Length: 87
Image (cartoon, rainbow, N blue to C red; front, side, top):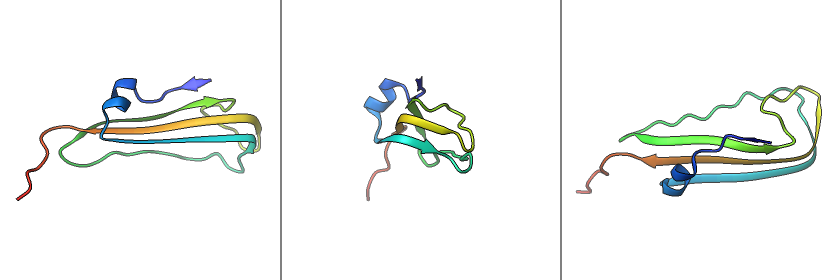
């Protein structure tokens, strides 16, 4: 099991939290996926993303079959600074 989800404090205090859980009895990749998450914006943010994986390595291999897979993925972002005042 690999767990590199954002720190608990960030997830609890975040302004935006997205969580998804995927389960599969059998999973095979035709190609090794390339993934990335990028945070941008004003007034700035504290952010993090990561997953907890059961029976699925961080680096999957093309054509290999993985069984009884579970992945919980979390994205969390907390805005920093003062919010803009409405006029």
